Length: 203
Image 1 (tube, rainbow, N blue to C red):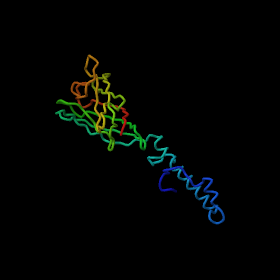
Image 2: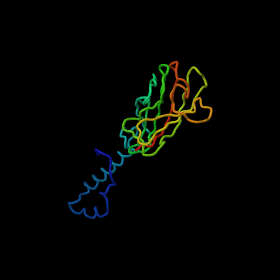
Image 3: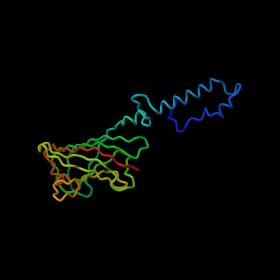
Image 4: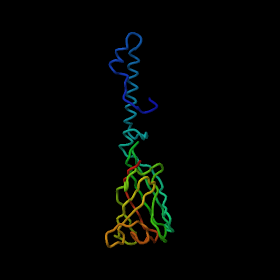
């Protein structure tokens, strides 16, 4: 079995190569061995069912997700946001588009001023283009049944952290940065939830 996936198209069976095999310089066992190696390399690239090789087609087609813990912060502000954050992500090998699934559950009442931002998975950096995130999230307090606010991701050029905006309590339709105090609504009671599925373009 090859120790690595093929980095180039096989060249062992080109016509000129076969013409050079004559007499004892190219026995049939060598030709068959070369064919076998190429088949194994292609099979490794495709991957067996449930392949754990991240560069195999099987692995990427299944869009296997990896868990991570987003770290919340509020730059240059005094926002206190007690919450538990969990996440998972998928990014194909050498892919420019990554997908995130993020959940935050408040463990207390938020207070102070400032906006919320969350870290991307380790090694992820936004591409050199503004607003290179798409998707939607929901923010909802369990105590206010039926009350949901739409949340949108914002990812600036070269950033490693996500920010969010929402209409929240805005009557004019403008989007404001999520602070959890007034936008989208006051987060408290220890049971407010943020859920979102997001795609980001990466460097």
